[in-house]
Amino acid sequence: MLSIFKVFMLLLITTAAYPQKVLTLNEAVNIALQKNSLLKISSNNLRTFESGKLAAYGNLLPSVDAGGSWRWSRNDEAGTTYNVGGFVLEVPASITENRSYSAGVDANWTLFDGLANIASVSQSNSDLDAAKFSLERLKQDIVFQTISLYYAVINTQQLLKVKEDDVRQAQKNLETISERNKLGAVTLADVYAQQVTSGNAELEEIRTKNSLETAKNDLLYYLGLDVLEQYTFPEEFSTEEMNKLENKIEGYDNISFLVSDAMINRFDYKSAQLQLESANDGITIARGGHFPRLTNSIGFSSNANRLDDLFESKTYSVGLTLSIPIFSGWAIDNQVEFATVNAKNREVELNDLERDIKRSLQKTYLDLQAAEKSLDVTEKNVEAAEENFRIEQEKYNLGSSKLLDVLTATTNFTNARVSLINAQFAYIVFSEQLKYYLGVLDYKKYE
Image (cartoon, rainbow, N blue to C red; front, side):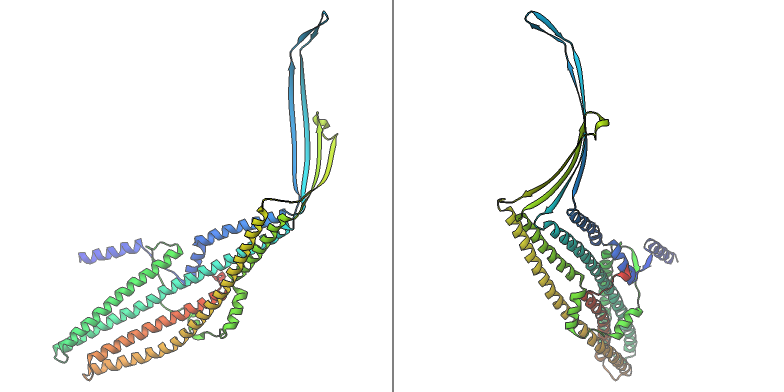
């Protein structure tokens, strides 16, 4: 009685220390979008692009400076005497104070700099839009990664149920065979064979439990949650998941159309296009150094010895300055070359991304088609394997079949169930992966 009480208290303490929490897919994705550090950094960096855009527009406007000054000085002259032809002249001591006031406003405006300032505005707009698209793509990355990790947990959880059923069936068969051996209906070899089968089933159950814990830890770590906290997960398919399995791949029947849609929808592809435009603007900015620079200046100032008279005297000024670059030690050529190489590299990256999109889409599309066919096959296999297992079990109980046939039927039934579960979750993940590669994976519904 005391031992039972200790076990009960241990379970109570464990439950209190690690309360069970149900974690749905929507909650998992929402947590990922809130806690992902890379997403936070990218969101913060977006402000620098917005500031850069404002600064680029500011370069099109005049720069205005205002200033003023006040100066005070005092000169103390000591008295002295001069002897001029026998006459002594005395110069008395004196104190002189001077005050001066000034104020002025200056404005400078770049009228022409080889169109560099115009290109800077275009570049800042492209950089900001590219950063926004990259942020959108990052959110899709997080959603898809979370979905994949979450379904890995659910998949392994359902596989564990199959392994547990297999263990229970193996133990039940062992008990039945042991009783029949006592009655002399079966040989001792059958008992040993079933013991091995039961032991192997228990080992598979242990391995699957470890795999489940690993999958849970991977998910919780990615979500930024404590891996020591205990979470439970749904055991049945949701309505949305069932719809995916029933509706199959309707609407995705032409790879060419899929590629065209991806080029329109993919945020990372849009971002890469804008980065190429930004790099081309960088060439224009660099080449601007070869052109003359024309600036305009406007000024106003006033000076006075008394504050009340400060604006009695005024000075106005207007000027134009033309600066013509003749030789700068090839510094501008170097900048142009760097900008040109950067633009070429961006073009290569864009072409690589386009090829990668086509490759990924084609592979995922084929995988999804294979998963669909696998679903149909495994569903039929489970029905056939279950019926064969039932028949072989009855035949063995009646003494008209060998234990080897029962073991084979059991293994085939278990493998068929495992294959069906894997096929179901493979299809769901591939369908989400296809949306991800198409750029239409909806992350907003999770925010």
